[in-house]
Image 1 (cartoon, rainbow, N blue to C red):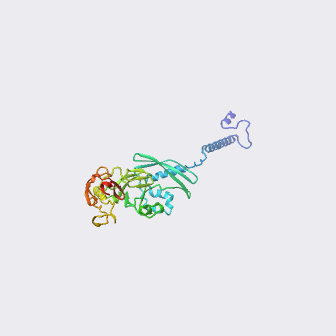
Image 2: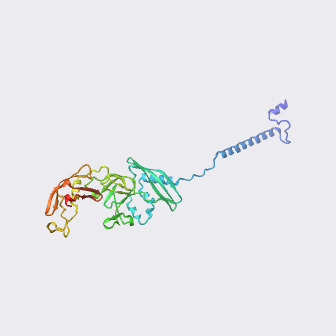
Image 3: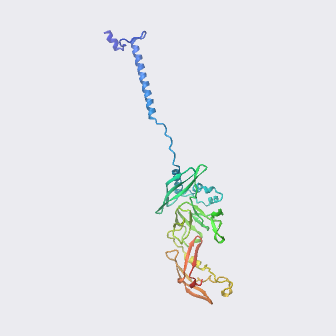
Amino acid sequence: MKEDLDRKEGAAPPGIEIPGIPARKLVNRLSECLAALAAALLALAGCGSAGAQTAAPKQAEPKDKAAEFGANLAGLLNNGKSKRLFDLWTGSDDLETEPLADAVMPEAKAKGIEWKYAKGLFGPEEGSVTLKWTAAGKHSSKEFKTKLVDGKWRLEDDPLIRMPVCAPFSVDGTDAPVVGVLGEQGPCYDYSNGGMPKEGQILLLAPGEHSVSVDALKGVVEQPYRAMAYPADTAEIDFSHKPGVREGGVNLVPDKPKLASGYADAVKAAFLKVDYSSCTESARCINGETQDQRDNLFDDITVTPTDDIMHPTIGGTYRHWKDDGYYQRDASKLDWDLTINENGILVGVYDKESTGL
């Protein structure tokens, strides 16, 4: 009975005895040691598990620098960041072309056009990126050559469109400044002097839809008119041709120009300026004058506008000099054409046999 009672109260099993330590305490200490050991093992296992689950930090994958550059370039074009685009061009640091910075249009989000990165490849020092663009139902792509300069990738060619109108004009309300001679790069040229470069009005604009006004066309067409500047190197204004890209440039005119109230008078004035003088010192001239007598040849013509800005109806009569004086002729039989550009309206008359010109 006594033995059973001792075992119930935690007596040591038979054969386990340590002198000086009661059996009950021995069992309790042994239990505590085993519990502590178990806890330590669990903690150790937990640390090992956590270590196994914590993956070593991965090495950052090399960035595709061409894709990164191309995406950034597309963003600058889409947002019309003209100043940053100009600075991205290596020529912005060139002393010869640096003055073009004064002709860069203010920044404004591009209208009517969207750019996206397509592909690119960078070498050790040179490379290129290609962007796709969509505008006014048209789409194409443009390649930009790049160059590594002082550790930064930059554009070899100006990404902005140069618009050297070389006459007073404005785009989106910004008047074109007069920029001095840029070496062989113009901005304008004196064709009466062998095509020598000269100063003139120029603007640098991002591709997209813009509003345009030209001083020489006041009263001829309603202004400002809107036109799409498709991606190109240069822009011109020539109503003799359709809008859009041609020969590496873009013609910045509207699809359907609206005629202003002074159009007919401007066309007639252009006829009055036609000067193909045949009166020389040795020729017989009216009243002995040596000046051209045809300034008034077209006084009596009439100009009727049509739906085509380039083809008004010419009627009435004109005066033709022959031997002993002027003779009236039918103006509708004249062979002529118009040029309408940044210089205004110019008339060419080619039917020399019937006009005496």
